[in-house]
Length: 148
Length: 170
Image (cartoon, each protein chain N blue to C red):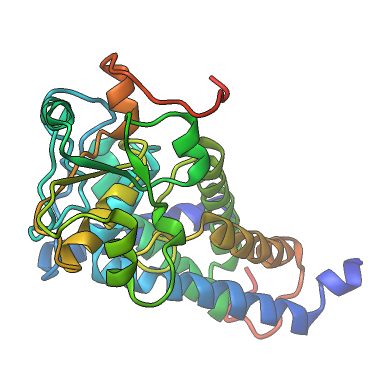
């Protein structure tokens, strides 16, 4: 098991998948922060005053961590954030299901039209978290800019 | 690890807040979002757009209800509808609208003229199905649509009669 987790190729694959997903997910949020802020509002988890700040900073955290994970620079901090963000996303999405809230999740696009299934996004995030956890515990530093 | 994580957060904060100053799509740093509560004013969700049908509050919804002419349209799924809705409302779950010609579908499902007063609603502030339903009806040519965003929860909160087809939890 340890050998599999530390596998250079698996770790590279995880870096590309997790990093790529975060960068892709951030794109629409950065382009239209107002729409993303509205998506956050619908979760009813963040106090109104802080929603815009979160909508401005969170996508950039996704981008910087995505880049850091892919190029392998400050990758330890980035992997930590990737796991934290995914766990928070899963908890937030899960809470909408438990509370019976019907919303656009705002995960990959700041959606305006049809209601997005929270279940689909939830499963996607869970799969992403598996790769992110592998990254977190993998000792492979091959093909990274900096091993530190 | 923690040091790197803090540095990443600082860089992201500087980028996010800094670029917002020069972005064509910039937003206020402090949001003006309404916290969860209900009052006499119509609740207007932040996703509302200028062309949306008008939003009405509990008072207006109640007045429309009292006319007995307005069609109340519950956009939630059948289970929520059965658990408690505005009396006389009809149920068309927005999430399971059929594929194909929606115009024909609504013509037969609503069975009212295009200028008939219609009020869409769902559970309340944590649900945007009423908004999407209202928008769709307007696009399909219904000219007298309003959205009661406070929904079933606000209706019940103000002590108004609910129609329950079955007993549900809480």
